[in-house]
Image 1: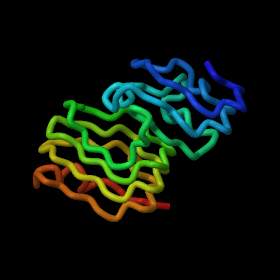
Image 2: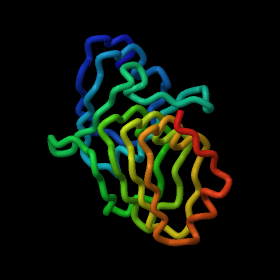
Image 3: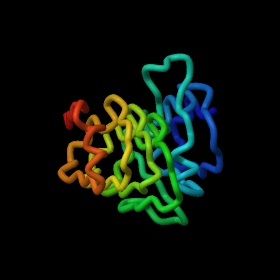
Image 4: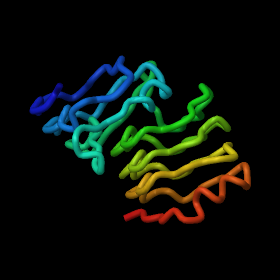
Amino acid sequence: MCEGCSNLERIYWPFTGNIASQYAFAGTTKLKRVDIRSIAQWSDVGWGGYNASYHYSPFDASKDGHLYLDDEEITDFVFTDGATYIRTGCFRYVKGLVSVVWPNTLTQISSQSFYSASNLASITFRCASLTVGSDAFLGCSSLSRIVLEDSTAVDAFSSYTWNAT
């Protein structure tokens, strides 16, 4: 799709669904801004390809991503639209995200969903049942606050390995 577009700095993203190629954004080293229509729509994008163990996102080349909604950077976000899952890699290297509050409808956070979102400092879960994928928060070096509003969600984190390196 944009493989080798080394001067690409900004994308307006109107799509949902799966991205067929894991290399769709390979080489987009200057890409730092993606404008989206909604968090629910962005969270539904499946980044993938033939290698199911590793999923690229638009910010894998620049490692400095920023998401915008209605021309405002998303920093502190409260999901209010009934999201049920966060797909693999959709917030990888999103540096502008500082805090997230999920609704009680959330049931799954896929692997590497927030990989290296290094400014993410606070997450709040309002859900009762949750599955957290491997390395979902790997590299979230600023993460210092986790709030589980429903005590049954603690089970999802009991076997999760927290690693902020």
